[in-house]
Length: 207
Image 1: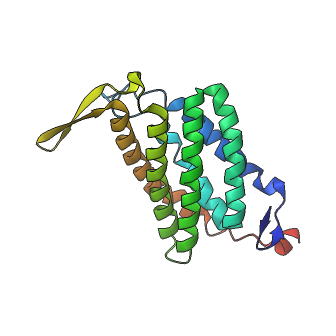
Image 2: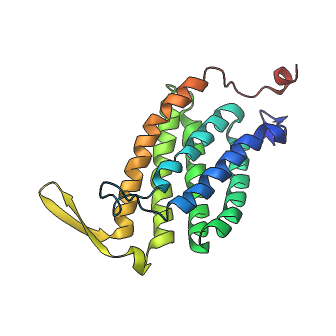
């Protein structure tokens, strides 16, 4: 793999690839378990809290190695995560997750790269929010639309009125709200490491 037209050793990419795979595989298991506390079982799954870490990994990899190498990290992480998820979760969830992961992460890479020269927080925040929105729509539509166990009508109070939607739609909406919050929180670790996480310079790294 190359960054700045120079070879990037695979050992340098092992950590982001492993992190991508672990986050997606864990999220595919956790998304099957509603949060059984505070009446959130019809609102939220545990997968909403683990998956946003993938966008942090993506943005840090992009800052370090650039978009071309990051796309390859996403492709490898995607393939490994889908293979592992077929074993850990259902084949439908594995396919939905893999598709959503791929399109969401690639969108994040594109947005991040276009905004990377602006204020330090704009690129990771915008990329994570847009990527999360696309990822949420694709994943929940492919994974749960038409599934009788996830399609019971649920009423949600909205100001002075009530909105009734299938369970999976409500879960998708609140899942995205959690991802939005996590995107904001992820700016803390991103900002903490960006000072020493410089763009890859093979010549300097070899000295």
